[in-house]
Image (cartoon, rainbow, N blue to C red; front, side, top):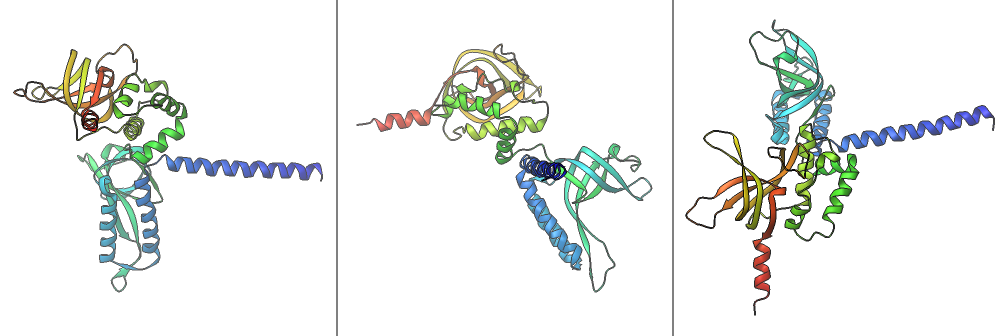
Length: 333
C-alpha cells in the first residue's frame, strides 16, 4: 500500500470516529432534554408530515390542534425557552419575522394554518407552535402592547423548559456530573431508611460539583435527590430540631428566620427542596441549601400546628413513627 493510500485510509478512519463522536454527542444532548416534551414533539412532527402531504379539512385541523394541546398538558400556559425563527404581526399589522435566542415565552400550545388554496373544503396545512412573546423581544411591536402572539414552525424553533421530570433529572445529573453522583452514592452507601438518608446529605455542599445559578440545574438536582430519598407523607416523624428554621409570616408576606434549641416535635415532612440560602450555617458555604417543608404538631394539642421550612442541617435526629410502630407490633407476644 502506498503512503498516499495509507494516509487516505487513516483520514477515513478518523472521519468515522469523528462522525461517531458527533452522533454520540447528539444522543447525549437529546437525553438532557425533557423526555415527555420530546415525545409530544416527535408525534407532532409525524402529524405535520401528513398535514403537509394530504389535503385536510378545517375540522380535521381543529381536531389535530386540540389533540396536541391536550398532549402538551402542563406545558400549555407555561414558560418556555425558545431559540429560532418566529412570525408575528408588527405594529402595522403586517406579518414579520424575528429570531429569538433562549427567550422566555409563554406556550399557547399549537396552531394549524393552510398552506394552499382551499378546494372541496380541503387544503394542505402546517402544524405550528403558538407562543405569547414579550413585545420588547421583537422588532416594531404593536404600540402599547406588552406581548405579541407569534407562531413558529416545528422545524424552525427549539423549545425547552426549566422543569425537570425524574427521568430528565436522572439523565441530566448522571451524564454531566459523575463526581457528584459518586459523592451521593458514597454518602448513601449502607443507608437503610429515608431518615438515615436525610442525615447523610444534611451537610452536602452541592456547589462543589454543580453550578446552581440557573433554574434547570436546581430543578434537576432537587428531582434527582427526591428520586433517591422518598419521604413518608402518610405517617409523621418524631424529630429534634436545633438551629435556624424559616416560617412565612402571612400578614407581612415574607419569610422570618427563627433559631430554635432542642425543639422536639411530631411532624409531617414533604419533599426535599433546594432554595436560596436564607440562614447562615457555618458548615455549608453554598449559596443554596437543602430543606424540607415541615408541618409541626405541638405536644400540647390545644395549640395549632405550624408549617416551617427546615434546613436538613437543623434536623439533629429524626425517627419514622411508621418504623417505630411496626417495630413495636412485631415484638408483641
